[in-house]
Amino acid sequence: MLKPIEKLAVFQQAILSALPPELRCSGLRVLPDDTICPDKAALRDDLSHIADILASAEDTSSIDYIANFLAGVARSVHDRPLEDAAQSLARDNRAGHTLAAGLARISGMLHERLEAVGQI
Image (cartoon, rainbow, N blue to C red; front, top):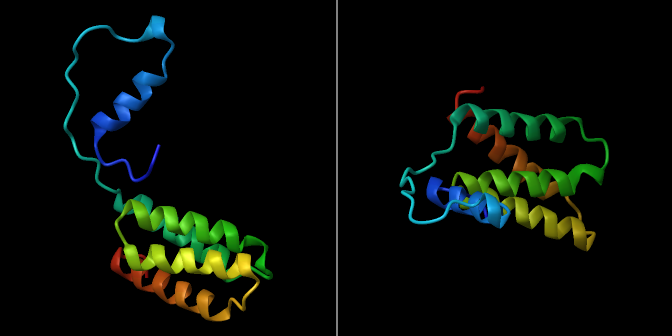
């Protein structure tokens, strides 16, 4: 499933379609039209998690994890600048480029986002 999943009906349909045919509901059913909103506490936890990993990283082995995790989190909250920065960091890492500027940029953006959600 592509993330973010913002409609409960989309999630429900994906789950139901993955069931074996004998367990699927037959006929019409009402699908909720609720919109899923990002949880601020979960966002704070995710951003803090990445900030902790970034602060304690002694080599570049965790860069792919940081970049991919952060891109997913940013996508889920529609934070395009943070997603772009994370994807840029991942590209630079794969290409073997120097990462200091990208890591500093990500660190600054994490600090800003954590301030905005009340962490700092």
